[in-house]
Image (tube, rainbow, N blue to C red):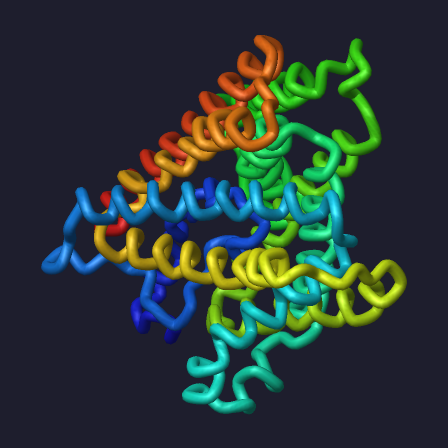
Length: 333
């Protein structure tokens, strides 16, 4: 993006980007797959955009259900290996069109490498912890990602956090602690690993913002390749020959997440982010319903209260940033 010739315009504050992003480790943290994320007002279709976002959230949670089911039999490395191969095969037509040069020579290969390593570690944390925790518990922890990102934006990005957002961050952390139930047996290693995964996911989101000049296809390919390498190294240690049904489910982990990711991008083209992004929190509804129907898990009142606090804090941060972005736009006009 070229700099404006008017120095007075160049010195104006930039429009802050919202910290709320799709909280699902398979989503690639919301980066584009070669489709512009800007909203074309001529072709807006808000109801369809909302529908696509809800569909994507349902697919993400459905993917998590499959993952929880599979890690009870197969190792995390084996899950990531087959999942990554399926995802890369689905991306192969786009990779063929783009060619190898953008993939092998991204603008900042070091940060891409760091992002790929962190993404692999985060997804491994997710799939390991989902084998021990109820699905609603894990989704609740990951819903706190925007709160982590907002807290990290000041030391890592130098962004100022005003008092209302700082209070929302503290309240959100309180919701996380409440959801972890530190006075009970639920405050366990799987819960701590899930929180670590959430923290890593927040770092990935920040790095992705730093790499905004890199094509989304490159970002997704690098992270899929990182998971593939991890799977190749670890899967043979605990390999279990999958049945035909399980092999299809393992492959669907990569295919469904990629399709859902494209649905999110399409939703953001059809409707403003301020309209469709809050619907991401519907994931807790699907997690509770599917967790009960498939695994018989039902969250207790403490978990539901903690998730409610996290959702309210996340929505407050999101709409606060939307308001500030609108104020900056008006000041620059």
